[in-house]
Length: 485
Image (cartoon, rainbow, N blue to C red):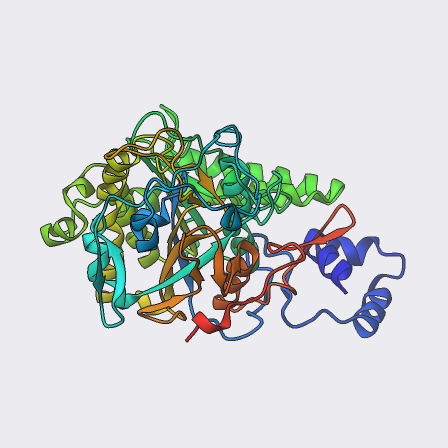
C-alpha cells in the first residue's frame, strides 16, 4: 500500500500511463487490487500540497508556535519548587537518588556533588496555586492558561544530540524536523508564505551554536525545509532580485525555468525537480508577502507595551514573538523560535536573570495576544528546552553562586492553547528534582501528542526511505491523553 502511495507521489500520471507496459489497463487493475487510502493525496502532481488528503481524525489545532529555549533552562530555578533542596543546601547528593546514572564529562570527575537549592523565591499563583519563581513574574500572571509537564525526560545528555532529538525524533542527524513533517503531511494554509518558518534570537555571543539542519527536511522533499527569517534588510537570503533585474523579467525567467524543469522531469522522474520549481515559485511570491508580514510599523503602541520595548528591536526574542503572532495570523503552519543562552554551568544566579528577563514578558504576551485575537483556540504554543539542569552544583558552591550541569532525567515544559488543559500540571519529580516520581513523558510521547493535536496518528504517518518506513516518533511514543481536553 505505502509503496504505491510513494510511487504516486514521486511520479506523474502522464508518465505512468504512457510508460507502463499495459497502460490504462494496468492502472485500472492496480487501483482495483490495491486502492489508495483516502488519507493519501489524490493528485500527486500537486507538488507542495499536503500528502494527507485529510487528517486521520478531527484536529484540535491548526498551527504550532514552538518557543525553544536552547541550552537547557533550569527547572529548579524556574518551575519546579523543591524546599528539600533549600533545606539540604550544601549537603551531598545521596547515592540512593543518583543511582549511578550517567553524568557529562564536565562533572563526572567531581569528587563531591553538593546540593544547590535555588536562590530565588517561589510563590503560588493561579486557581491551582502553581508555584512559579520570582524570575518569571509575567508567566506567573498567566498560569491559568498554561499546561505544565513536570516530568519530561530524554536519553540525550549533550546539547547537539538533545536538541536534534527534540526537533527530529532522533539523536542522529539527517532526519526531517517536526516542521518539515508537518509541511509534508498537512501543507500550508497560505500559498504566499512558507509552511515552516524559523526565527532565531540570543542573549550573548557565547551561546551554544544552532545548526540549520535542525530545521532541515532530511530525506523529505526539499520544499519542506524550514525558511529562516533574519533581522535586517534581507530577512530571507537571496529573496530579492539582484540589481538590474525587474520583477517581470524574473517572472519570465521562472516561466522558462519551469518549462525546462518539466522537460527534465519527463526524462529522469526526479521528484526534487518539482520541489525546485515549487521553491522558485514560493520565493517569487514571498517577495511581496514577506515584507508585508515583517513590517510591524503599523502595530499600535499598546502591542509593543504588551511584548516589551525590546519588541521594537528586530532580532530580539520579543520581536520574534510578535512576528510569530503575525505569521500565525497569516496561516503559517509551524513557527519555530530558538532563543539561545540557557547553558549556565557557572554563575547561574546572575545569568539566568538575564535570560528570564529576555523571555518572560514576551512569552506571556504571546499567549495573551493570541487569546485576545481568537487565535489561541486553534494554536498550540510550546515553551521549553532540550533538558533540565542538575540539582547539585557544578564546581564550587558558595553562598551566592552556583552552576548546574546538563540533566536529562527530568525537566519542565509548558504548553498553552487549543486541545490542552488550562491551569493543569502533569507529572511530578522526586523531592530532590533529580528523577521523575510519576507520569514520565518521553520526547517521543511529547511528539506523538503534538501530532495528535493536529489530527495525525503518529504511527500511521510514515515516509519510506532506503527500504524502511520512518516516522517522527521512530518506533516509540504514546499520546499523553490526560493533558488533552
